[in-house]
Length: 236
Image (tube, rainbow, N blue to C red; front, side, top):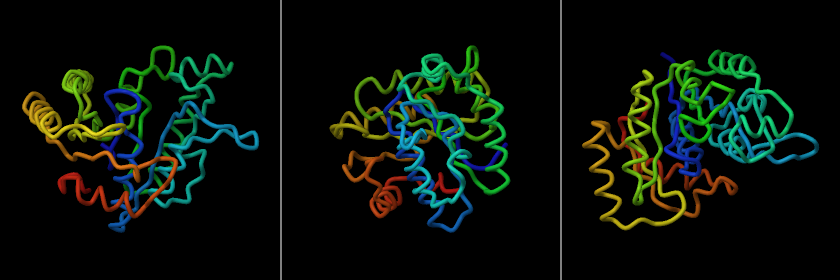
């Protein structure tokens, strides 16, 4: 099993990038040789005829690495859809071997890796190849990022159950208030129920904070919040 974590989510937009970047920043601040990767990114911007993902730029800055962009994000797609759809609309094919080679290269350069998936575990990457298959290939422990608000119990339990059925080692859960504040009763009761029903630790509860903006990198805020809100058991 590799060293580091594969970050997945219960849905798109739950805050996987912020969590992955926050963990990378923490580990970098501790002096660890940490690398980051987002194997596949969709909804990329075209700048000077090159596709770039804001998420990938955020991860790169969080970890303070000088790895080539193409290693951190070997597959970049312009359309903001699932990878299979985005690839079809762009008349391209996703080259999984390119992902594997980039991952192997980053493993050689770094002692630890934080890998951010795309969407949830059942997002299709290739015709019959899903994010869960990618996570299995990389052999990294899984961290599930979920919301704090109503509905999160069902989404989180489904994700954890599916991960376990497919042999993934689920390390724990991080609850993230990605878009709006959640009242204390909802947040705490959801956390308690998820912990009880999955028998997994809640490794962190990240509050809504405008400074945690992928498009406005704020290293000081990232470190401050993650130092305070992430369980010490998650520190490698």
